[in-house]
Structures are given as C-alpha cells and as structure tokens.
Image 1 (tube, one colour):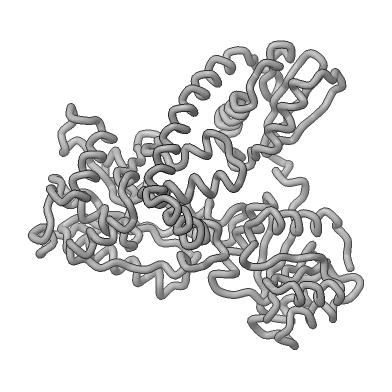
Image 2: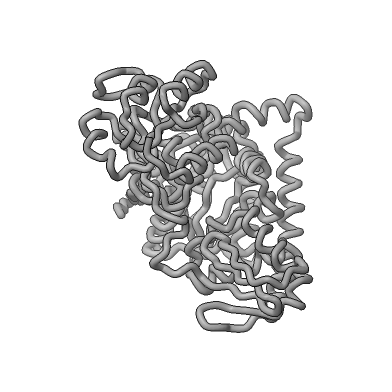
Length: 481
C-alpha cells in the first residue's frame, strides 16, 4: 500500500459549494447517522473514502472532504483493465486528494486468473485492500459511493436471477468487516445528482469504458431496462429503493427466525443435525438462512456464493416431503442429508471442488471487454471452472488434449489460419474437444452447428439462462467430437 500526505489545501472547490449544498447535506447527514449518530463527534468518525475516479466516488470524496478532520482517500487498482486506463484513474484520484487536502492511499490487487466469478473476486479483493488501508490508518469506517441507481440495478438483477427476500433487499447501507464498517451514505442519492454535483464543484472525473459493455447484465439493466421503467413512472428508481428497504425489514424478521431455528440444531460429526419431524415446519427462507449461517460458522463463509435458490428449494422440498427414503442433496458448499428421522448438514470436504469436476473452458479469438465479460459469465455458471483465453492457433493446438470446451468467437481476433470461427470449428478433428460459436446471428449459429459445433449463444445473452443451459449442457456431455 502506498500512502501519501497532501499538505496542499483545497483550491476553489469549497468556495463553489459547501455543506449546505442539497447533495452534500444529504450525504453528510446520512454519513453521521450510519457512524454513530449525534452522540459521536466527527473527529471520532475517522473514514476512508473509496474512490475509483468515477463521478459517483469523486462526488463522495468532495463531500467528505468538507468534514474536519478530512478523510483518507483510497484508490484500488486491479488487473482487469488495461494498464493505461488503470494509471489514468489512479492519477486522477491522487490529484483530487491533493486538491482537497486529503491523505491518499493506493492499493493493488490481482484477480484475473483466479477461479470463480471475476466481478465478485474483484469486489472482494477491493474490500480486502480497503480494510487493510483502514486498519493501518486507524479508521473505523470505509465509505463507498453506491447510490440509488446502483440500488435499483442490483434489485432488478437479483429479481431476474430469481432471488429471495435477501437478494431483493439490494445493497445494505452498512456492512461489517470485523472492526471496520463499510457505510454507504449516498445510497439515497441519484446518479444524475452526483454528476451535477461534480459540475457544481468544478471537479472532473474518469469514465470506465467497461460500463458501456452491454455483455454485462448490470450495464444492460442500466442502459436498457431502467429507462423503460422511468418512462412508465418517473420516480421508478426511488420506488425500487423503497421496495428494497421493505424487503430489508422483512429479512430482519427472517434473520430472527433463523436464530431461533439455529438453537434446534446440534453438533454431529463434521456438521450439525436436527430431528426431521420438527424440521418439516421450517419455511424455505429460514432454511436458506440456516444454510448460510452454517457455511459462515463451519466453513468461514467459503462457498456462500454457491448457495443457489433452486438447490436450496430442492433440498427443502426433500425435507418437507412425506418420503422416508434416505436422500442427499448438494447445495453449493453444503451436503444436506435427509433420512426418515434426521436432517444433517455437512461442509463439502476440502479436497472436493464445489463443482462436480473442474472443467477447462478455452475462449478462442476473443479480446477486450467482451472477453472479460464472457470469462466472468462462464465462471459464474460453472463453479470452479478453469477459463482460459487463447488468441494464437499454435498455442491452441498445444493444449487441445486438456480442454473440455472451446468457446469460439465468430470473427477470430489474434493469430489463426483463418478469421472465421466457423471455419476453425469445421477444421476440428474427432479427438478434439466440443466447440460452440458465440454469435448474435441465427444463420451463423446454424452454419456452425452444421460444421460440428454444439449450440452456443450470443454476446447479448451471455448471462442468460439460455447461455447457462448451453454451457452446462455442452460440458455435461463430456464427449470429444
């Protein structure tokens, strides 16, 4: 971590705006509410402001710099974007900190080749780096710039994925990271308000080009779905935020029920168990909470992101059914055993991957943001998948024996004997792995299938149920051509 002290006072920013600016007043009021209320003095609310360089976090940094003592402004870089953009963002935030007279801290994380969901890995790594910065600086709080549009996007994304009450609660206003708390004081402020605030303050900000990639679900929700909802009702985003608050209240009730239910479970071998007669009365939402608490306590939270709603409901159905036959359900990182008289939960043994087997998927001829988005989508659908990118024909030829599936771009980027993904598929041999074409055009997909491909999907639908089914179906076949 790099830490620097900026002695330079803010220039004309505070002369342009002040604490009475409507946006600043709302954010500061909420920040104080989330950090102890009126009983706590500002000097006891030492805060790290997470700043990416975008309009949202720049606005938050400017507002928080109005507080005495000033916050520490932190910027975290990772290896997902190109080095030039990363350096431009870092320089922007460091100059902003200098202008505001705030300390600046920089952390760097690497997540590109880690297994699992790329976006989730990047987020978790950023928070870990921010926690280190806050702990080293003696700060109890980390402020992030999540806003009302982020909240609406998250709720809608979770709804599309079939989330329960927890997911429909959206982004929480606070989150505990041990001795440090993450607070989100701008959660009730619209994105457009933050952009206008930056203009009022006379500060610039960076644009992240990955926010334009419609291959990412969040971007499609932001650019395509939200405008339609706002055309139907102008205050749709605010109302979605209200719905998230209501779901959060409902989740609090469920959490209390989970705590009461937890008392009925007793330690047993490598897990916990309870009588099935009493367990038949557990609502599915409470059973989900028990599973999450079990993973948190018995597996240090590893595998929480693998507890899908469908698998939870399948195990719950097995519990409440009248069948007395012994059954075992895999719910992400948990094995649920159901007998005539008992329900038992055990953590998947560490030597076993959470997925049934580690699949090797190679992206052929993909580049730029589309490649990152596709890599992230596949890791989200296929837990533990080893997803690689190849843009060279010779390199591809040398790894064919260890590959389970080729995901081929329609127009190949890189050094290949052909620019056509269909022709590459046509030239594969019987001992080569299965291949699918990524294209938005039905006629190209049909041609690829005639050439020997398995059914694929388009870039615009790479995070859809159709894409998930195509990937899992191709991998489940486990056959060479």
